[in-house]
Image (cartoon, rainbow, N blue to C red; front, side, top):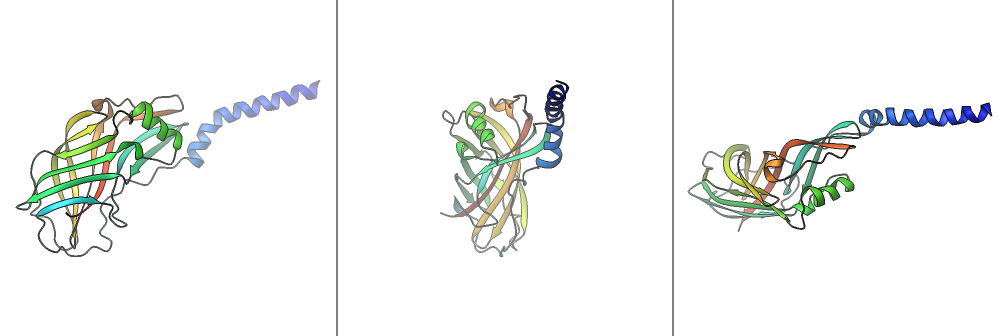
Amino acid sequence: MKKLWWAIGGVVAVLVLAVLVGPWAYGRFIAEDDAPAASVSTEGAQAASGSVDGQWTVVPGKAPNQTAAGYTVHEILNGASVTVVGSTGEVAGSATVEGEKLTAGEVSVQVAAITTDQSRRDAQFRGNVMDTDTHPTATFTVDEPVDLSGLPEDGSVGTVTAQGTLTLKGQSRPVTVDIEVLRSGDDLIASGSIPVTWTDFGVQPPSLGFVTVDGRGTVDFLISLARS
């Protein structure tokens, strides 16, 4: 009988230890931050050719400047503090540049295609969080002209500030974003991160016991454009 009680006690001790130590061990040895969202790279960049004026269309691009968009958010998962980055290459859009000013521009993202390294997280994101069946796309549109005349033409990166409208889950809000822009050969490449408070867009950050998501994050984009 004593051996039986010792055995039962050992099992209970192991279970208690797993409950108490499991989240700590996950955070210490397993959980890792995701790689940061993609941004403009000057690897292989060339001097700009021709004028920046014209009609531009979002294209897939080439590594390391492949078109992608998504989000960055901080969460507590199983007791571990991690930064999560979700992204997709299913991005469309266009831009108009006249007199070295960006006079019109729109980027559209297929929200259901955004993925991370966790399928369960992605399922929650598509369903309860973003309701992608009802709101399949997120968009950013430029509302005011953006001066591009100061952009470098030597294959280095310049920065401009854009005023626009971000639409998530059917809710539109004015936003300001600093955009890194690279003119390389006959290509135009741009990236930026838009700070957002999720509830401003009707998005409720999950809090499910095993995971809690911050109320703020960023909407990220890297877009390659070619002349239409």
